[in-house]
Image (cartoon, rainbow, N blue to C red; front, side):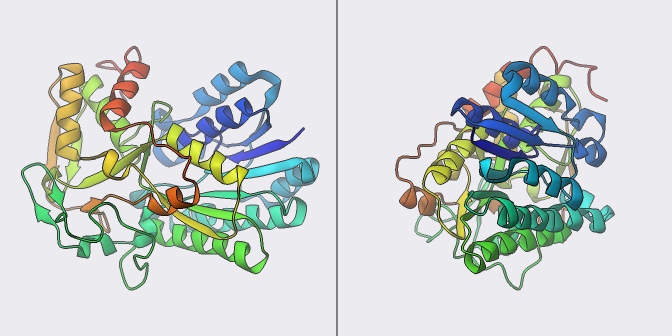
Length: 359
């Protein structure tokens, strides 16, 4: 039986990938040691998702509580499944700017070295398997902040005649800009994935995601923008706005749309591919606009607190272009937009995220 090996399998994108590739008839081997709990505390734990996946999928899903920094444990897993591994989907990561500053060694060991460990195991044990890497738009550092943005009532925006109005393309430089410690570790991973594709002729792809979101997100302050907006609104907890007057813009792509892109690459892989992957012009919002939508959905006013200082390296505006991916995979279709995403997050958590339930 063909196997899909998925790291971060209890997280947002990982768990969506588990379900999706299981539905394609593959056995799924999941790797997740719930480091999200260590990073962000109990409310961010993904343990609940492991229980749900094993219950829903039964023998189709095999879970391994393995750390991607543990080379011996990874080698044992890859040796066990060998060339039965048909695809490797790497979503495990330390995802926070703020956390990376507190412990840069762990951040780099997880994001960069963990990725290298996986690549080498693919090379050693299943070199024909496509390697799909969840990268990030943070590899571009704060370069997007050099764009000639126009301040509007609820957001920053680009002029309609700007080359990047329909989305930032992969030709934006990643050099000579501020990345944050987290961004730097993700750059290292991103470039290594490309290098294994070119140097060893492996089939690899870096998907440089914008705001990846959906109802399976274990939302917390340092990671999970739209889900955390909804959680704060529903639980009546304080949402802290960091700089830019709350007008910073994010594109948001639902985990379903991300994973359907993974399937397209899996079915027709390339070598050293790099794709921006986000909501694009179809699905984007500023913080102020997301607050207004949350209030419309629930009837609750947002409780917010403004902090003048923005997070270091944070983007004022990010709308990525999916044009390169759509050119290579024209049958891929984006389904969700921001209102659909936020309503689904609300519906999925209406009985869980209630006032007084937050820590």
